[in-house]
Length: 444
View 1 (spheres, rainbow, N blue to C red):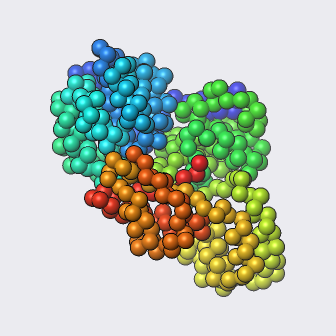
View 2: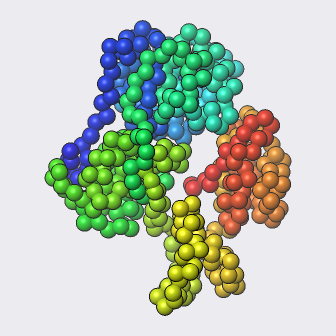
View 3: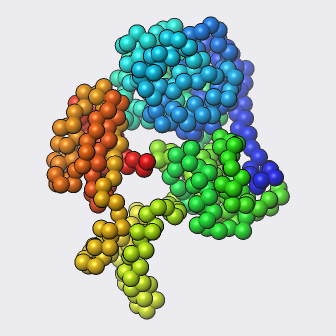
């Protein structure tokens, strides 16, 4: 169960029966139900037949390029899937397809259609199309793009990875009719209990783990790493994790990616407290695994600036220690089920404006932050479109806006940090030039 570094020894081995193996070998459609995490796709890619010829053998359709990079990281070591190329730049991908076609091409629906439009990719000649969690693309409004892509693919095999096939029945009826169904890991009937979580990209998970251990300072910990991100990491990069014997318990278990229900149950049995480090889009699945979810904050670069708020915090400590707050707690208690308590406290504090507090906060946050929008020039998006949404839909003032950079596949918008959340909320879900856009804070 545990190795000599304190990591959970684990392997995901879904049962491929004769019907599943026959579907993969004969080119029939297959639906593979698993968590929306790249590690869960590895057993499937290990079962795919080897490439015959030099053309792309498998096209993996992913909801976004960042997720595609994570998928390529874990399937790149699978012999039948390698070499893998992720279409993060269309010009380079066109050159790669012309000179050294990969066995597996990973791209978003819109990038694939752009490659088809440039005659760089012939989907009808591809052996199979793997749709990686298409529910995300469908929720983002890419139904037409997926339908067009699969129509171009002709008789290529369809393999669909999904967290839950029930909402996709209409889509599967159209594009994977009478597909064999493999339930590698299904959702539980109800959430199992509390979990703390932390959002971090895959390549920064071990750094995030170090922050978790520094923040919680447990006597021992179990680390579950399904993507084997530990390989090649410097020994000094992670504080010592105490070796645990099988059947022993630890104060803390940390999952370095979204777990399935059975793995989460194992981690609960092994530790008193569980922290899951995952990406933002995986939160919807985690909510169905565990409840309540509590965010975990770890130290960051901005902590030095927060020292300036020491006097404000000290006055709050004195109020907490010397005042009966029962009435206030009863008034706020319903909000604790809807929002993180720290957000409720911040909102309550903001109702009592203080020039000293406002000055300290203004000095402790960066003047401008960047927001990443998932649309760009290829979607006919213009600078004026984004400015109009921010001014009209989000209600920002012109002085709140900084540079707006519209690139080929995405856009970057600078706004004042104090209005960043409002800007993200105003942009996300807005339809611009016929496409619903999504936005998020750019942490880089």
